Image 1 (spheres, helix red, strand yellow):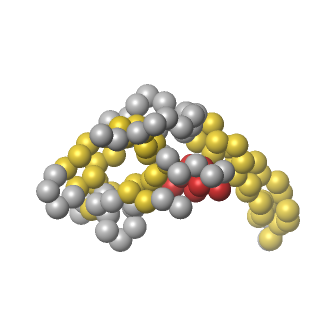
Image 2 (image 1 turned 45 degrees about the horizontal axis):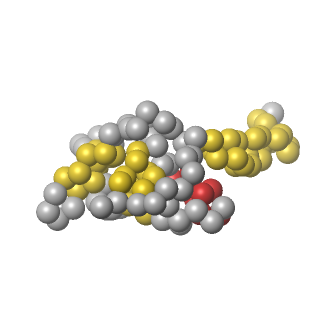
Length: 111
């Protein structure tokens, strides 16, 4: 069986047709470092370019382990050839409360 390791700060809840799976945070959070450089200004408002670089907090690949991370981390990991990092699919199939906040997802996504 594949182990799911949650590298976010919050529970990831996945609702399928047959079950609800709660994946608690592992205590380790993966992030992508961002650098910003001012490239201009419009009406006194700075304009910056943001470049996402190094992934921090992502463990090395392990057999039969899938890491759940933010979309940004999963995208960066994919660009680095990692196929063991997924993100909750927070698109139109996500389950939301009355205020529009995501409370669960129906699937995970890769990039």
